Length: 236
Image (cartoon, rainbow, N blue to C red; front, side, top):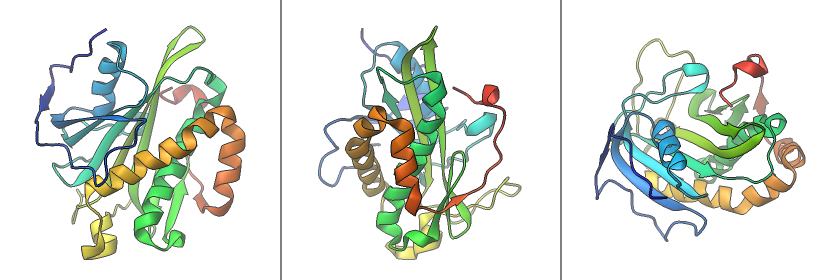
């Protein structure tokens, strides 16, 4: 079935950051200049038949979403706003919370490549990554079910890269790679390439043993306690 973009998106043929070496083979990358939410747009594409490994990114989100309906500040050209589509054959509803943790581990691994000192990074459960004690990335996992059968899962990821200021009144103090690393901050393309490679290298092992892989991978990473809502409130 052909996939069509929702009407509230604006495509731009030059919007996609150029891959440094070519995107990892597991992923098909499609880029938009502007979208309300990459998760929302990718859900429509998934329902229209987009394949496993489809990656949708945007220069700007006008209604970026975080966990529990919170807003993700997504100014044009300043951050990495992407959603990844997976069609795993075997995940159950009881395993879905591991997907969020796993995604946090992959974002942590990605940023550690550029930060250079992993101790500066931490994962705050269930879905945030912190740099120097401030939020630098967030994750929103959403799934589509047909009864007990999982049709697809979308992993939305936002990384603050080029921002030098943030709106007042944020729930948590924020930072960006630019604020933390200065001129050494990587471009969006490099971050996206590293992120997709991390998922490509570890996703299949995760599917084979979600709880086990998460337990092993988190041993050497700093985890901060978070506020968990009731399981029924999670957007799975």
